[in-house]
Image (cartoon, rainbow, N blue to C red):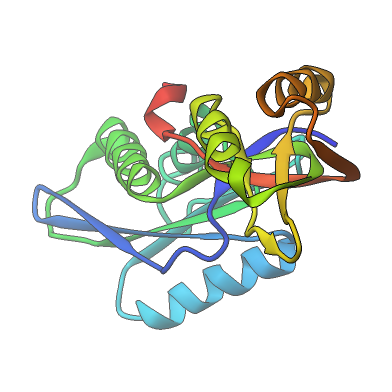
Length: 218
C-alpha cells in the first residue's frame, strides 16, 4: 500500500471566490477516484455555471498521481487548466478534480495575469478544503481490563496514535491503528504499561485517512 494525499471524500462541497479586474473566479473541487467521476463533476459545474464564459479544470488520479489532465475551456492555451493542475501537484494531492469558473469582467488580464489568477483561485480552493493523508496502518485489537482503559488511551493519545470505537464486553477491546513497522514497539510499551495484562489480535493493513495541513506541503 502507498501513502498519498487527497481531500476528504465525505467533506461538504464548498466554493471559494477570487475577484480581479472585475473578473470573478469561482473554485469548486471534489474527491474522485476515476476519470468518469472527474468528467461528471466538470459537466455538473458547466451546467451549474452555464452562463459563465469559462469553466476550466484539471484532475489528478491514482495513488502515484499517474493520471493527470487539464482543460483551458476556451482560455488561451496553457493559461488556465495547466496552472490549476500545477496547484494540485504543488500541494501533492491526488484523486481530486478542480474546476475554476470565470465570469469575464470586461478587462483582459493577459496571459500572465490569467495564469496567476487561475493558479491563485485553485490554491484558495485547495487550502479551504479538508486534506487527509491516506496512510497504510495495521489494526491491533487490544483487550484490557476496564481499569486500564484510561491509562492506555492516555498513552495512545500522547503518542499521536488513533484508535476506533471501543468494544465493551467482559473486558474492553480497543482497535488501535499503527504503522506496521511500529507494531513491535507498541506491544513492548503496552506490556510495560499494563504489566502484561492484555491480549491482542492483529488485523489487516488498511488505508486510514489522517488529517493533514495542505500548507505544510508548500
